Image 1 (cartoon, rainbow, N blue to C red):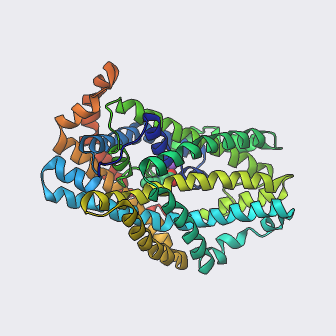
Image 2 (cartoon, rainbow, N blue to C red):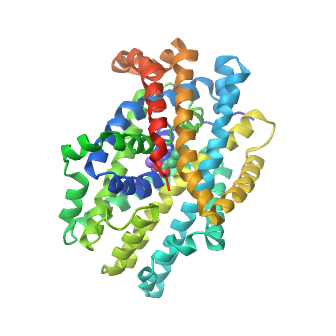
Image 3 (tube, rainbow, N blue to C red):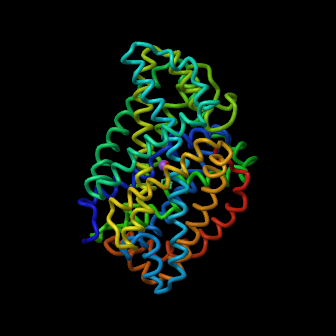
Length: 444
Ligand code: PHE
Ligand code: NA
């Protein structure tokens, strides 16, 4: 059977934006910003997205579109050596690791959505009066496992339907819905009392915070930049391998980074005014990934029309999580379909069965969950991207330059050589450096 391709270029861009926009923007970004000095973190993060994220994204695109294969076959065929295929195989491990913890978080969110929705219908907003339990005792255990399986099932259904009828169609519906809901929520948040304090926390830039904490901020900001752009996992190689036209990759890469960053910033414009309007200071609500949602849920419970707002908010988060989790599942699925003589449907069933088990382990064991979501994923993504970029710079070389400049116009062509130098030399050095500073970063 012929390998599937995206139906339209917009479909590819939306699928890639869908992968990028996710819990990384909505859950991890505000939490990391709050923990790392507010706007100082935002500035460093934006710089890394521009200087590392966009060129890195283009590195993965060049590998994918040139080879029309998922990472294992791509690295093997472009290099003509089996050994690089083994390097590509790490992406399969990364995809499964990512989905194993992500699906548990997706499950929490799905539960928030279903329960906040139900209380609108039932007219009973009581749920949010005790939000802490979801990130306290109940977030691990049978409940968490059950909702993880539900979320994983939804993910599998979309991937099962294929590249065009599943991923492309799904993200074409989800991405506009996310944007519209988020902008509406941001507008509404602006009308809340004390919203200005939230904006100040998020946006007022204090150079002294930056100069005093630069190295402490660097590691988390780099980790966040990779995670948010879905870099280092092979997702972007896989998605660009379904491109069958030679349009400008630099344009697509820039568009994806801008859209992803905008969603992150708009989310901040929802979250921080909301928290401050309820007198919740995010640096004081305790640390950890749950604090943000506990704070938000607390805010929702005090607001007029809180359940409606909560439903809209968790609806956004659920859609964003799904459009990312499908891109994680697609990594092992594309590997199996490309490398072995099995159908997409068999590959989806097999992989989903596997992640059902690994995710359940994470759902029952907070220590394992924490390790996978934090240290393991940070290392796999950083090392993975470094390997991909070294491959682009040192194995593909001129071929990479050729692929980069195809369809890129004169501006894109002028960027080709500096880009190749940066992905071959500067970025890998930077990534190895952040890998070393990373160990203080806990992704949980
Ligand atoms: N970018 C996604 C997010 O922000 C996470 C992700 C990482 C997806 C790596 C695919 C691969 O939630
Ligand atoms: Na993201």
